[in-house]
Amino acid sequence: MTAIVGSRVNRKKPQKAIYKFIKRKIVPPLVALAVFLVIWEVLSLMPGFQLPGPSKTFTDTFDPFIIQPFFDNGESDKGLGWQIISSLERVGIGFSLAAIVGIVVGILVGANRFLYNAVDPLFQVLRTVPPLAWLPISLAAFQQANPSAIFVIFITSIWPIIINTTVGVQQIPQDYVNVARVLRLRGVKYFLKIVFPATVPYIFTGLRIGIGLSWLAIVAAEMLVGGVGIGSFIWNAYNTTTDTNLSEIILALIYVGIVGLLLDKLVAFIASKVVAEQK
Image (cartoon, rainbow, N blue to C red; front, top):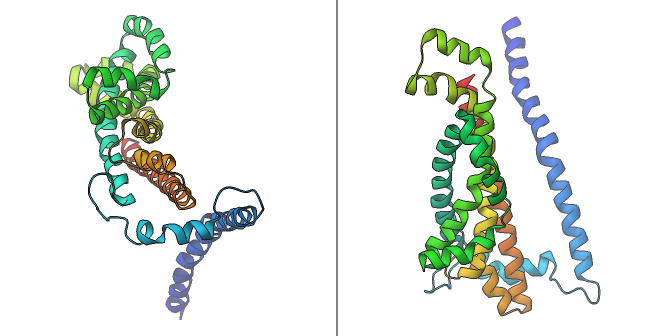
């Protein structure tokens, strides 16, 4: 009898946890979304309101942009699925390069006080330059749109990675350094046993900021360089503005927001696993 009661209690615990998760994490965003859509729909019915409402946006873009996100009619006439994949490819290359270079440079700068004092003012100046300001320089250097867009991603996302990694190295507890001296840890062993575990949380903070900036920058850069990409899609739709094209732009913005959220959550998830292993 006791075993039966215990099994019932054990079954109820996961059910309560799921109920609490739905109540706290799922229901509030859905309610907020519903309220937003209702307000948007009401505003769209008002005279003089230029933007289509959610119902019209859905009907205008359902075929082909929602139901066929991967259609391909050649050139830049592709579904939003292909547009986003093209943008993600550029972000993946630029952000990966920024992560590698940023972590290495951040560790070197953080470990050397003289080097930090020498380059920190330069980094602080360069990191304030808007992403699109780099585009003319990159176009002049590379003479091609795709590498130019990748360079904009790289130069935009590298600064938070460098700065956070540098801070992480500088914040290594003195006790850790003392232990390393006692154990005579040097070179690779010192990095793997002391520097990396202590710096990982800071590194992932920089990576999380960097991936968000990367996605922002690629959308803006693609508006100017053209080709296939979600930014180019938005810009082309704007240049031939009709009611239907406005709906396409709104749908593209929704996709941009969702992809940006997923990228942020992906980096946060990886960080939670790596940081937990380092503890």
